[in-house]
Length: 411
Image 1 (cartoon, helix red, strand yellow):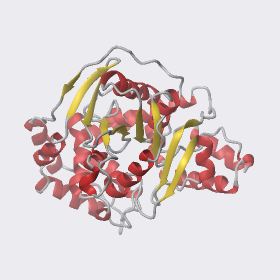
Image 2 (image 1 turned 60 degrees about the vertical axis):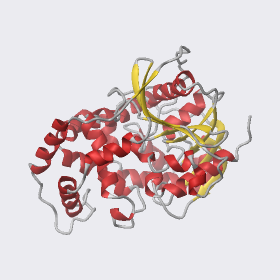
Image 3 (image 1 turned 180 degrees about the horizontal axis):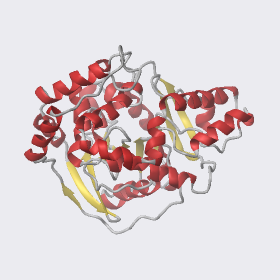
């Protein structure tokens, strides 16, 4: 395992796996009550007209014979996708869908945060903050909002509802286009839930890094968390002390990084170079994001098995109309700098009760590795789904999340 460790360490010093976040010491949030204001998405027509002009003017590259998805985004799929985007997709319809959810903005510690806030219909809803990641957006969770806030309408127990809060990470969507390390974003989330919305305690689910850091730094506020991964090797491990399952997991991750991790290396080191093209070309932006949705989802070789074109385009549009493609990918760099400023360090273990659900198209995290990282009280392996399960199979994801949080004892 010596060579394995040295190779893995060399890779990890340059970047984080998927989104491996820094876990710095807690920075206290401002105890002052922060006001929130209603927000509505209203994209100027001039932005849409400019987008249409750019789509029509796309200069397509050459492509290898029978390229498929082997060289990146499938050329045939992308051309069909762009044709749909130009001729059938209706942003105003999708904009109305987004605006059907109550949205707000609040300035917290000098950063304007956009968030959806929907109250549950049950007698005692649990407050639940859901965090997206890259390459998706707050839109990831739109299908599960009614399932969580009104479970009775979906065959669930009306007593097991949630108040659902879905913020846009700084640098993404309609939050300020500033890039913060994930520890600081976790501080903002803690303040949003307590100082803005007035909850004393709450649950959290979604992106591993921010959610774990929130639980680490605010264990008195966070009652439980739900994750679909717990993080990845960072170069500080002693593999000789790991179980066979963990050693196999580490080797799988290393192989994955060599085959699929180029995006991570680039976004963790030179994101600005990429940012020019993503902000200028809607087709370039689509290609960069779509390849990840295909690779990290249970598509079985066909993107349409997992996502509609409308959903995929709306997610891309949230980046395009806000011009946050560059600030979003820069989160990889600021998190890598925060995590590796003093060399790789062992992560603190999350002691808050944690539900971990593994989807087959995502990383197959063994329970031994998970227990090193978090206090796993429920470990589930699904038979279908991938990294964006809340979009891909929303009822499966929502039922699992509801069952976990409502099984936790009150404290």
